[in-house]
Image 1 (tube, rainbow, N blue to C red):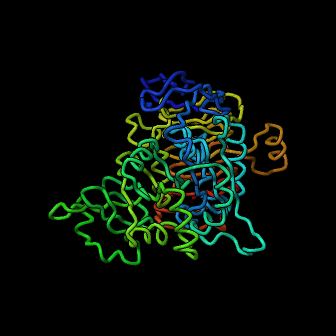
Image 2 (tube, one colour):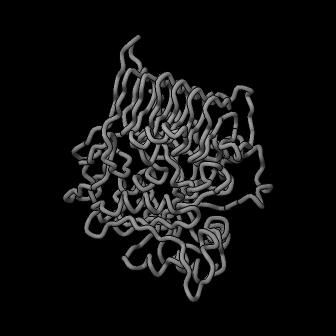
Image 3 (cartoon, rainbow, N blue to C red):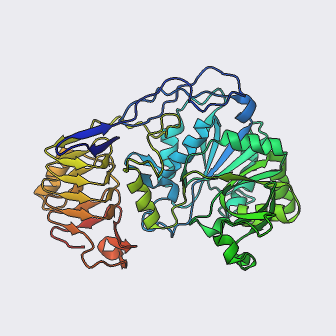
Length: 486
């Protein structure tokens, strides 16, 4: 993946992540250095990563991560029509789950389970192909656990708590002390070693990661009332949100006498293994949701639950606009959003071994271009262009996200055109502005996707697109006829 910025009238600066050797600058001194493991994972630009991963058993080899691949299927619809949230492509070369798994790898957590169920085909395939060959130490792995039925359980997973409960027998195959429960569809960088160390120092049963400052977030994760020692005194969810004063929530969450503060939960939990087993099997054997039922119940029954505050960048993609903005931020030079170019904390993905992007007479400014693209005499500005994208002569793409294509063959394109069809890619002389083009879409010639009438919300799914927050979203594998105006 390359990132392009204009330096002058006709000058381009091409920035690309390169393999990095040596210790990260912010590594912990509390753990002894061990031989490094070189994973068969991709960083960017089709380069095989040689970034060494150092494993520190005293801190994190006794922690197993549980990553949930399913999210709310309605928040990012139609991007979730045929895939789970965690499988949505982002920043040209990645999937959302790559950020969370990369956090684990960079934090030297090498036992990772991905629990999947809804629309899981794409996610299961990506995780299996990406991480199955990664060398994460002697006992390291990233393993997909898809929803299943047994003679005792004839139904599918009924929720996050039910999913963990029914998988405990698998999770106990390796000796661990704690489980790190993670949503798989959030975008952030976090060193989980700090969380683990704080959890152990406090001798807590459970530690909840919460936002240090109030911001827009998914209210489904709940609000925490935290005392001056960061102990969680109350866990409030949607049903009892009225108990929290709106003024308190808006004013940095600090009570008048500074005895407690209120923070949004990020849905990240570090929980002792014996505590997990007791809560799921004995205390709440019928609970379905892990956060609102199990964790909230643990707080109300007096278990020692601590809050670990996080002040970095975090995006939970509450709607299409948030997803669009996160992609646009990866283009900006200020790095106010998620930094995909961090040498000390790289993001890993599937090594696809694609050829370099071919740019023939195209003008590309302030954009991120994935691998294997073919850009012919077009103009691209402020956009994210995914892998294998073909953009025809005279096309203009501005402030848009092109998610890319799974297949690209010149002979197939010629064959489709000869039959009068619309080939994969963006057709000649088409204009796309402030839009999201999902994977494998076919955009004909002289098409205008510009939301000409400034519609804010519109359901045109039968015609291959919707409008959400003023952003036109073309559906996966949709076909937009020649000359269409959206």
